Length: 409
Length: 171
Image (cartoon, rainbow over all chains, first blue to last red; front, side, top):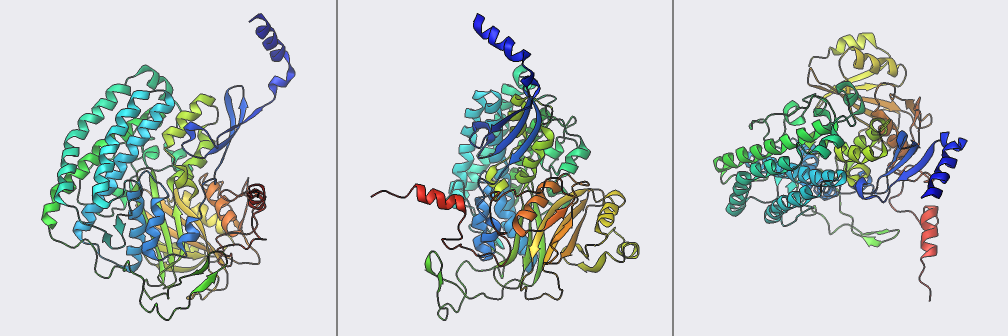
């Protein structure tokens, strides 16, 4: 004991202490939610500079999409933000529908709205679970996963998959809901508001939670817009920008909901916004379920939607050898989409997710640009972490709600 | 449409080359004088939110009737007027650079780095132009149309080659 103090004294007197200290957080770190590497310059425990380095999960989705036809690209979208893949599917389909001028049937639009909101609840539950776990509240984690499991089971009944749904198709959805699914969802919407109260009881006025979140990473409205923050991160600062209200898609113009906003723009306000969104999502699902009987018997796929099957004229194609995989099949491009460009965006659970599509008139996109919220939010860590303690960095990463698969594409 | 396009065209005759009305208002611009133009849009016209910035490679594009190979595409949004604006800036291949807008939007930092990473378009005035998604020692620009889908064995990334060598099964 005595020796340790002496050694400490020696070090403090050393002039080297005034020099900055460099440290890597990640790529393998439990609270970076994936493979995020933060290169930190520290002064004691205070962050002087933070350089986020991404790309460890880069799979070249944009390049891959240029070589797949439009329905195949939807499968790629599942792997972006794998926590809310149903919402990702929607934006991919919307961009192509905008380009081709497809009219999606009302029933399909309602079904899409339901799955998008289910994805939002799933995402916010997982966010709450991991964010609370990072900060030190273990119990919430278990409760959140219990309810998420319930939704995932419903997803399994809808489309057969729990995480990578690919439920949405260009021009509609893949399958209609059965009565069993509608019953399950009704039951869920009845019970879920009480569950939200449960979580709030656990952490809303918890002293540790308040100390760890209040006044951490405060962002003003102007700065949030300048940083490109969207979704709950922007609304926590006080600007009620929601793509569902500003540029409605699917069935969002026929349901009512409130866009919750925060006041102080700190981590606690962003938490409150997300909890409120859980309630609103639940309410939207309920409204859509009430409207479903009106559209009983309608098709769930638009007329003229591109087929899932390969195009005609395959017999005449000579397979071209691939440099690595040997001979692979190459289908003749069929004139499907018109030449032009389209831009579609949705309010994904994490923020604004948009696709910019340039078409050359074939069945494959010429350019498929995906603007993911996580990529921008990762960049924002640089500005938000400055001046905070290293322990708060965990709260900042959590509050931004990033998924590295979404960021690195 | 709240944006007076004629007024803009009169004010910036050298910048705006063409106006299109597709799914949203599209301005096709040249590179010279672009910075003043976009600053005017941000400060005077209320386009405060940069949704997206990306590059597009138009090599051998079937419906192409212009010279330049690349384009840098901006999507701007005006919260009050609820208006979306697309700006396409043409960038030639042999003089492959564009002005950086990092001073106006901090968001542009990662966007421009990605654009440089994928297309090799250099952004003048960017404080820290490095690759983002690809490794620092990567050769070539992957999203260009003439970049191969699969590399031959000699062209592979050096680190990958070393890894393969190291992990070769011993017999």
